[in-house]
Length: 176
Image (cartoon, rainbow, N blue to C red; front, side, top):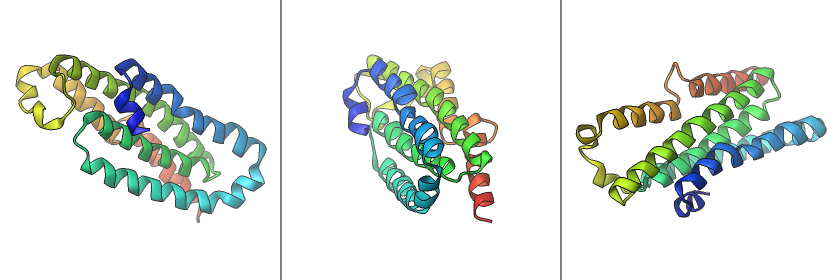
């Protein structure tokens, strides 16, 4: 998926992150949990392990990236792992947190890809090292970019934080 984001134009990345990435979560909610509840409960520990490994791998890979689109794309992979954990917790809080995180992630990651597209149109590069001094040249843009970045990492007071908090609460309640 990160390679698809890098090759896609800005509008394609926004649609991919905002809508298409959420179809997997919707499929889990609608079909896996809705139609095959017993099988989902049976395979939940396996899904937890796969999701945790995916979150760790995506997070470690995100730290190494220098391309802005790849950073947002790999963090999206990690967020979808958190969503899977919330869905398979089979607790109301976890399910609500997953839905809220998917909606919040769709808005925030779409906005981040839009901001990256604006930067690419202006500077013809997506490499981080060429954006030093951006606050001086584009202060309003930098403010919005920072706001969306903080929302993406789950700063308290944002919808991402509430979604992630509900997912963690759902996991704690399902294992107690």
